[in-house]
Amino acid sequence: GFAATAENSPSGSSLVSSTCPFGDAAVHHPVLCAVDRGLVSGMLDGMGSTNTMVKLTSKARGDDSCRTSF
Image 1 (cartoon, helix red, strand yellow):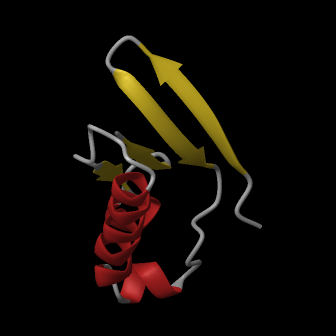
Image 2 (cartoon, helix red, strand yellow):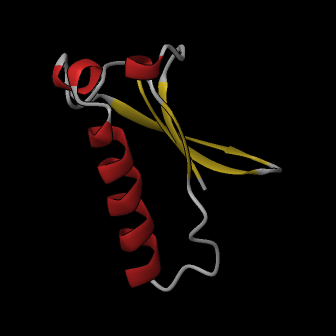
């Protein structure tokens, strides 16, 4: 149910999910969104990325999508 897509723009890249990968649990435990951001940042770092600054929007926090931008 993750259904993520990748988007590229001049300002960077994003992974966008139409459904929250954590479901309703993220609404009650928003720290899950921070954990997700940390996982993506660590993955990028491990892959040798020079930009591991990760921004996150979250449906659980009221945003229109779950988007991880880097």
